[in-house]
Image 1: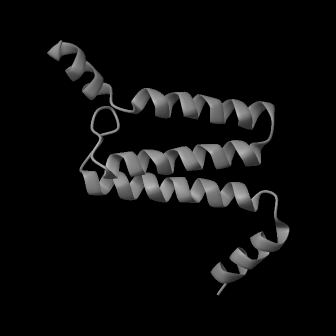
Image 2: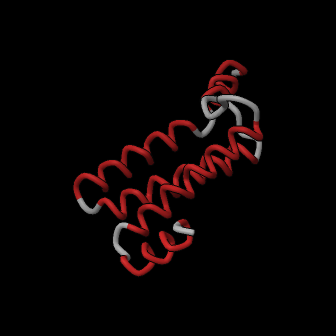
Length: 100
C-alpha cells in the first residue's frame, strides 16, 4: 500500500496539468487562439500555485523559488498575450509604455 502512495506522490498533480494543457491546445486549434492562450496561461499559473503550496513530483524542475517565479511569469505573459490578441486599444496602450 505504501508503494501506491509513493507512486501518487511522485506524479503529484502533473497528470491534471498535462490534461489541461492538451485541452488548452485543442481549444486554441479548434475554437479560438485567444481562449486557448488564456486557458494555457491560467493553467501554468495554477501549476505555479501548486508548486508554491508544496506539491512535488513531476512539476519539480529546480528549486521551489525558481519554479514558482518561472511558471508564474510565463503564465502571466501567456494570459496577457491572449488578451492583447483581440484588443487593439489595450495593445496600443501597452506598446506605448515600452516605446519610451
